[in-house]
Image (cartoon, rainbow, N blue to C red; front, top):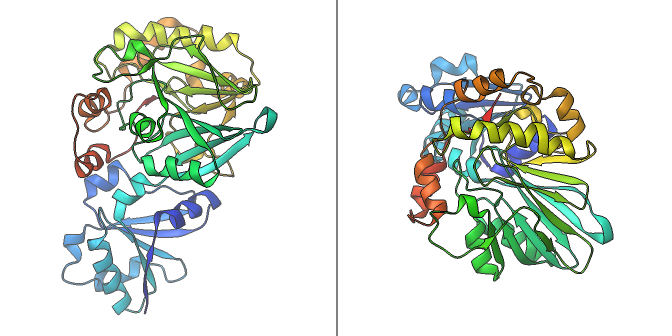
Length: 375
């Protein structure tokens, strides 16, 4: 029977459209348990590649014939071989082009909405890593917020829509993924903004993003208002865009809140985290649409693939915003922490400009799920 390549964009459409898919993941059991392709209607079997070297006959009863079958491995080669073996046994199957490394890097652009005076706001959903980046567009100019290291995606998208990138922001110094902000700014000749309280050790020039900054994008009235909101990092800064959208960085997610420990200062920063969430955010309009820098679980995606909820909805439903006792809150965010992100110290140093890993090393550093949240 046949074997075909399925690319990450095709898989992403199946995730967003909630299509059925059966995945045979041939990575090691530990890698599969730590991180896999998630979908509402996906079924899985994990059988390490080395167990199938002598043939796939013994697993044929585990592979459905009525569903589309995708074989997945880390880089592609192993899944291609197993897919061919399954094909020889009479199945139509696909393998994931580029493997989980390609899935980790894929970005799905989603239009969040139109802004006043003709602008648009786009969200770039990194399904394989849980990262969310943004592009604000107005009158031929664009600002990018929390870009991932795949700079070409943002540069090419801006070119496609006829926008010139003039400003690039990071809401904080990221620890779970390598920022593409500085690289994009250099390529586009744009201004790169970073909160100065997170930039004490950076070794490059940047524009200081302080609370109260207004940055004009295009000739319209679109402004990005910086709101100082420490807690995840000491410099964490949120943005209110067009008086309608709240880009919360890694402070507030849809189903969780940010962790305060990735610089080793959980006990010091937990008070800042609570003040940002329970005081600063409470002063904002509940009609603001929260657009975070990450998502944690597939259920946070909306029908169109975007990740967004009104702030009032989160005040009602997000557990992390409803812990009245301050000591209970402190315990939750300092004692209930998930494992730290892979290579997070190296990622921080890369984002400071202290080290410059090659492309393959950067890919390895980012492999795995996002772990910026407490829930």
